[in-house]
Length: 585
Image 1: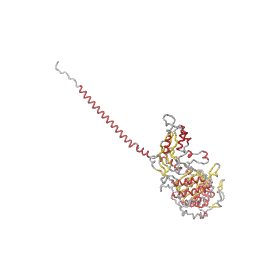
Image 2: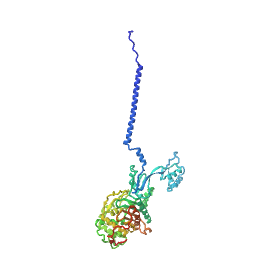
Image 3: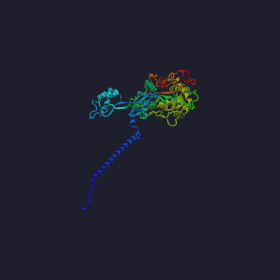
Image 4: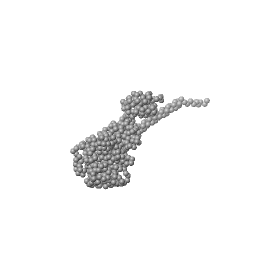
């Protein structure tokens, strides 16, 4: 050997230890990074969620809870805050044919036995009809609006298939009062009346906590319905309508149509009638005669014609006589009165005695174009102005009116409109000459619409005298309520039928305003096909059936509306009384 030392072996164990430590360190760092990234991801997700909840998504939990605490539908009240319609939680009676999991019969006892037991709890249920529903094997409501005590009785029957789900219901605490104004709710949607008009607002969560006041006064509404129903039954009329209207604002203080219906329990017959009944002019109970029924208003149009003639300058001398004892002949037709009033009478006397002959002459001198213009200004050519969805379209001759149309419209024939048309026209005639649309919304003081001028203020003042004279000396005497200074006009029109007018079928109307020394309210009363009975002295005309209703009604509602009786006050008639030979009642 040359003396060189042999090489020492490599420290492989130490290298491996260093490599292991390096790998462990890298692994630890990687784990720390992973954990940090995970925490960062969680934090980012949390921040993003908070941003979503707080900025983008509308308030979740709090809004939902607030909505849960709100009624399902807003409240409707009268002008003084008396509730007319409100929502409340209730039970319903539901038949669930799949109540038994084993697929067997859902009822322990027979359908007839269960139906009979339900009829003892709900006497108005038809057990035969209920038994048929139970046998049909289909899910069905057996009853809506079940009281808690009745729900307990149903549970005691012990039938699992009779379920009592909780539902939000609509309740009308005044019963059938103002039913045609309110309408009703069906499957959560408003129908017919203001429930339909206000449906969106009443259902809106932003407004469900609010009460919506209507223009009507429940005290006036109750009195109107009571007297209208009483008068309708007394003369066996097939229907009736009435309205009380503020002449200065157009607010409807009361509106009633007969027969009435109960919005808490609307029946199919309330909404439809058979074709046979419809052919006889009989309408379903939910039909609003005030806004929907168009008919010839008869002599209630005569003051409007005289007002137009005075306003237009066709009448300049109220003392001027008109021929009155011979029919007016035109185009093969004759216009006549029911009886001879006199050889000649003046315009005030024609209103007091309700002469067709003289009114036709006044309209003829004025001309059909002029009369038509006044009727248009009074809204007679369009559906009545009010919020309700059901509004009848007038039967109105289009184009230029021939001479005979102007004459017949002058005394209320040849044109068919609703009682609401008449109410708004009388308001314009008595309030100084301003026509305003009728409304069922309460109007705050000073916020009445400006309206449009139809008559001069002087014309309105003269007509107030003339309408008062009709109730003092003429056909309206039976409407004169002592101390309330009532003015107005009767109207008895034959209903049209096959081949002409039906002389045995009348529509009797009285249009009133009170108090005439400072007109505040219009009252319209209509009776459809009244019969001559002992209550009406066996007469069918408005003077004997509609006018007495006005006489009873006004003393009931006047004080409620701020009009107190005062027999020491009246409108001054001294310049007109010599024209009619008056001077005493």
